Length: 237
Picture 1: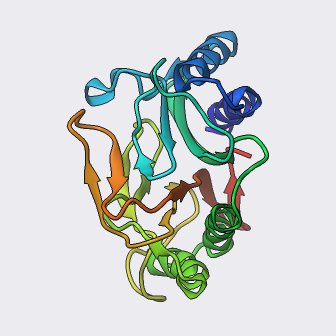
Picture 2: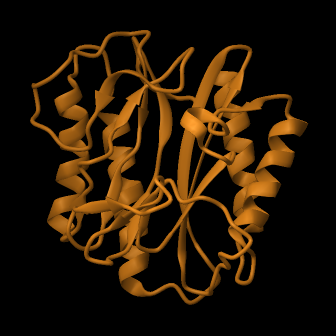
């Protein structure tokens, strides 16, 4: 899983380099597909429940599962979240980043990025044997909500291993001391999705793209994290 996680990291680094004003989300998709092939892995998303691409590319008010398209051009000041996974020798890795496009990102959008990234870091610090899933979710919540942002509740993180999505579900909210107890050997995909406005989302007619109901912008960061006797081991950084 460390090897598959490192492939995901390299793919996201390659896609980040391709993020610039005027690029299409299909350009990002093609860069990712080429890098996955180069590294000898198989895309985890393409064909999963019929999903057509190796990346999910979600812009501004799109929360998750945006489908790459030659018609979607990135503009200076946009936020684009990029989510991908691979399978290598039967084991999965999954990670997401949100990237500011160009140099004109607004102050609120930059704060949304910073707080969402910080909430993932807080969640990872909570991961250790004997901690609970509630501790992980509470760490996200305690980082996000005091800043005036909201946590998407319709989508959560998940276990990961020889399947892309395994038990348990990993909510980005919760109460400390509640929920499943973490044990060494578990691997979790922790992925806070944070909205600048209200938490409510809806899925568009394409059956995949989830957007904020109020049109507010959203950010998404994800790592694949192993629980070890010494605490969290991030497999995708």
